[in-house]
Image 1 (cartoon, rainbow, N blue to C red):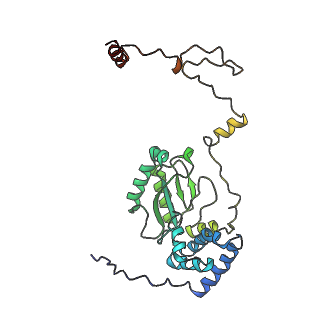
Image 2 (cartoon, one colour):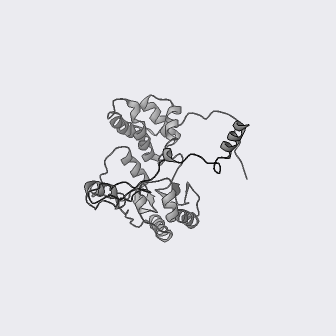
Image 3 (cartoon, rainbow, N blue to C red):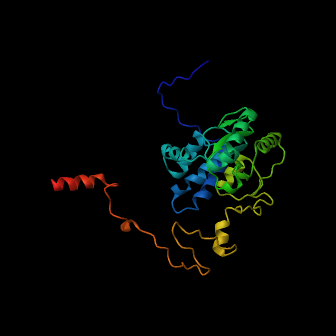
Length: 280
């Protein structure tokens, strides 16, 4: 078993993209940069752009972004390593993320994640041998009313079970059509990265596809609009109930902290001792 030994030699400068690829990416990058008053603001979409080319943010991609924005590679790397949507190593065509945050976890997310690891034969942030699927656990996707949630290239697959999740990854690997629960039709990770870079999704029906929040997410909005009856207000302890107009009846008498009786000898032995000492 060989192990790599670092001799402390600095890495050589990253190679550039081939000339034709570089020319194409430069044209796209300038279009992105022109959208912002300051070129530095274009760094996030440019990272998505280079990720759409290679499937991850390579050293070559970092060099390209730095040169286009007149930044150092260290500045670009600091951003690329901060956000989890930027991959730092080659990954699969389909990024399968299982939410393991609190609600999804207790609803079955942990079981789904463990089942998929065994089913695919990979660990967290690892890719299947055929390069199709990269599995990872992810944090909250703001879809708790559909828990447990699995995302494929950031498209939602709601109310999953270990069985349905296994079928999902099997279909992805086999090349069968897979439809998200809501949102746009599924595309590859590289295609998703290009869309995130700010370029239009030109697939037929993709823009029209939608998917809103679930009933639990919209409960507060419906209540605000008066679409549902107002909830019953439960009175606090020792508080009188409200009448139909929402006005309290005569409050029940109850002592406040400032009305509490003064300490007695039974509850405050120090007071008795003080009195005895004064008597002496």
